[in-house]
Amino acid sequence: MEKRNPMIWWLAGLLVCGLIYLLSPILTPFLVAAILAYIANPLVNKIDAFQFKNLSPSRTVASLLVMCLILAVILLILLIVVPLIQKEVVLLLQKLPAYFNTAKSSLEPWLQKNFGVGIDIDFAQIQQILTENWKTAGNFAKNIAQTLSTKGLVFIGWLANLVLIPLVLFYLLVDWNILVNKVGQLIPRKYIAKTQEIALEIDAVLAEFLRGQLSVMLLMSMFYSAGLWLAGLEVAVPIGILSGLLGFIPYLGFGLGLILGLFSALLQFGSITDIIPVLVVFGLGQIVESMVLTPYLVGDRIGLHPLVVIFALMAGGQLFGFAGVLLALPVSAALAVGFRHAKQTYLTSQFYNG
Image (spheres, rainbow, N blue to C red):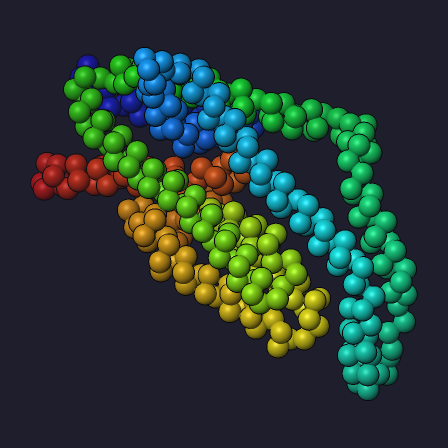
């Protein structure tokens, strides 16, 4: 009977993986809430343990305070980014005729000389169409009404997830320590010491990754915003914040920010040579992030190969969408810890040493 135990554990593991795969369409809000709960739990513990003249907030109050803090941070980011982007887009639309005229004066002689064709485009009409569409896009009430009428089920599903995330987050924060203890009680006693060792190592890796990555994101947002502002880019702040905050997805923040920065620079300055400062800012940003901030704030403890990173991101996105992309690298880092311990066990086993 004892020999069958490993097979039972393998079957149980496969069953859990199968259930996760089958339930993946509805797991996104739970995964997002679990990520936020793991990051915020240490702060909840500190508030819960705080005492002032024999008065101490309950775990429920501490959880609500932390949730309010998370909501305030999200609203602050939106209040900074959204008005800036809207303002810069309106400014861009106002300057479109000058950009189009510059492009026409540069391209038309070359096209006429080499191909015998000219540019006959009504730029004023294009500007009017873009301006009207932007104003329509800003009509949130109308857009919501159209969404409800044409894609009601999609909108309801999105709204349900939006409501479910804070609800799940609240219960996880309140009962986090209880849930961890209950899971620990289910582990067979002969495996408890090794399980605790692996769990503590995984916790250290995830804490280093998640909290360190958050610091890198904030610092890179400030770096890109300041650098692009010094380069004279009018949309420096929104592009800088977007590039830094998307840095948790490898290469996405840098790539998207570089594309937006180069496009904005070309529209604003109208010269290839004027985009060089933008290239310098993003080049220096990559050097600072990869050689200074990430090693210092995140460290090399995760140690995932670039191919593993790419595969993990693609697999996470395929299985769980955006939440899967968020969770891909932390889960891969945790699995890497498990594989390291499995390798040590294998190298000391009788099967390997024969």
